[in-house]
Length: 506
Image (cartoon, rainbow, N blue to C red):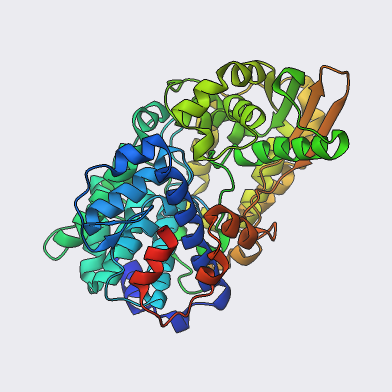
């Protein structure tokens, strides 16, 4: 019986465009538009220009024009994506960080259809590894493992490696990845992105003789520091459960968990313009109360400890991100350049000081119920003792919000019994998860008070740019920003990929 990793590679190696549902292929096209938009916006900033400087010409297209060697191009585009966390993601995985850059770098000699298949391969393999690591320790990030595996899988598919070679390439990339705390990831995010792409591209070149095939098997030491309770059921459902269907294309340069709250404030700002016929000024903000569930609360708390000079301090901190949004009227890479931030520093700080992020247990239960309803089948690999150990770890974790007697009724009203029921439906097969109907539930409640005595409420749960919100295509086209974005999204799949990539990035 083949190992877990070899089984994944065998499925990927045999995958052809005709095997992939049309809606999944369409999402892969939109993923390229979104990633190209992030690269184009990033390279236009002074920080992006410094990353791009002094690259020798080669056969791979670069954002903003010009060429470089394939590995150098992949490193640049991954670095640009990581710089402001403007990359796209699927359930449990930042696959867009390095996979799409690796695909672009490998475009020569392939068709657009080849690139789309390779992108889906990266999404499905990288996303499954991310799901398997879902129950990992707090205050660390497995992003680089997911991104490295996705990029290696995509590049190996385009390089024509057989299943054994592809499995070894993914293994090598995973072994080169590094677990990072938020502070470590924020110290030099562009370098983290570039290093991730480099490891994946180099792994493909060395894969014929190196790389352990049993790295992802049950009992492997690989899981030790990443997850005490790996969800091995995540590796199933190949060809039936398409993680690409959970793709979210970010409209703003902000972390996954902060996106819904930022979009909620943005909606209030739009309503203010319609009502008052002018923008809300920073000095008019009296207070912003944001009630969130555990995931956004914990990420915001971790972001507060990140060096304020790092671009990611704005991507991870709700207060700082919303400060930029109000002061700059946007949250894209150009709004996060050093010059842009310096120009509006006092306004950003003023708004940030007016924001209170409040943990709401009812919202946490709602989020947990939604995720366990979708992912309940994956918990079949955990026996009752392991589930009790996991519960104890969560209960004893330091720094988590405390609950009080007055929280009990909101918690009960959110129906925590449904969480238990969801966990009882455990088949151990990702194929039993309805990914086509998956909804990213990250509910938030906002009240924005102005100095004139009024207040503006907003409630929402789903991130813009997802399948569930129905705006993913519009977000992808807007994020790309090119006049020919729609035509690029509809390009003939049989056409030469290299010119397509060049136009995407120009």
